[in-house]
Length: 466
Image (cartoon, rainbow, N blue to C red; front, side, top):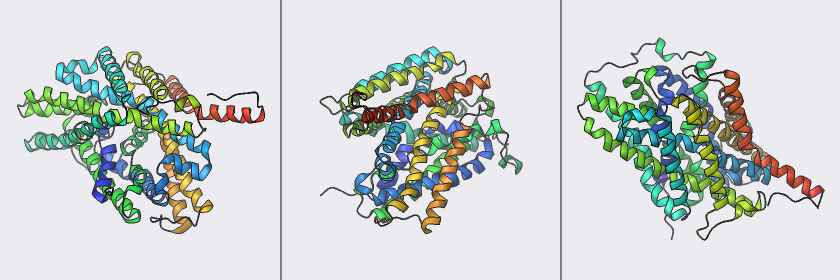
């Protein structure tokens, strides 16, 4: 008999997919004001997505996944758009993870290399294509690598940020953000709120528990409790990690790419433990590679499954003997490499990192918006489907939760196009145009496929992409 996941095991699946020290510098930029911004993001995004995932995952546990949920609500084409967004956002997301890996590796060699664009891009492309080639061996190879990365690439650095930050303050060193009541109030200038849109990236993955609902003995009890536990752990890590980074590093010196290693370097120097920096940097870098591996294969296999149903181009369904969709990995590799080259053309490493993060957030927001709309729609189209966990309050309750989530998605999407005042982004019109172009290019294929399919249905002589 297959072992069933309990509350703690399911919660840790969520925590492993979300918690990462890589994103802490984004909120550290705000100092004490991050507390109010965290509370707002939890209210308008994290809690709604958790409740929606719990209802959808327990009502359709055998169908698990955003694709199946959106397909159930709006049909196959909408489901394809949802799963494609999950795949496409990774193309822009991979370079942000790779830049973190490259910057961490730089601290094992020479910290000055963390701001050398050529070094960063060379390391990024080497590890990206090396990991892609390793993924051709199938899910067993990537999951074996990923099991190491869960701890070394995500959880360990996040824990160390808090531990070393606390050690820094315990030595009597002053905080870079002295506390005051006024410091808790964020500057609501438009440019200062730009990073708030990026907070979505801190909490993406909370729907993972819904994917595994069928692997629990009692979904109605286990899934919502596991999500609640994961929310508490994730928020605690995010808040404490961001705060301690802000305590140690001056705001103007926080790099979005190497901020975590900067903290390690500063604190280890204060503790006279500089010799630990190089081995720690190497562990974090290799852990980052291991954390990356499962994401290279996972979303691609999702799109391949849709292609097998005839809802995506047939060539996407082609796999090798290890059941790996090679064409999708090639497309992903080429696209990710092109985005990685942004680091060569944008002078500031942090600006390059942020622009890629903004594109990633814009694409994934589309998927989450479809998910919120689905939980509302299915209350009308399939009201009698048993829901072991049901968003409380009947139709008003599901409209409240789904509506807040949709408003949060729209708000974050708009903020994603606002150049953050903390970074040098150059001409605003060019910045917005580049982001809009990236979002359109990445999200366009499902619409092209739908257009070609309709055209083929009305004109039998015209073929769709195959």
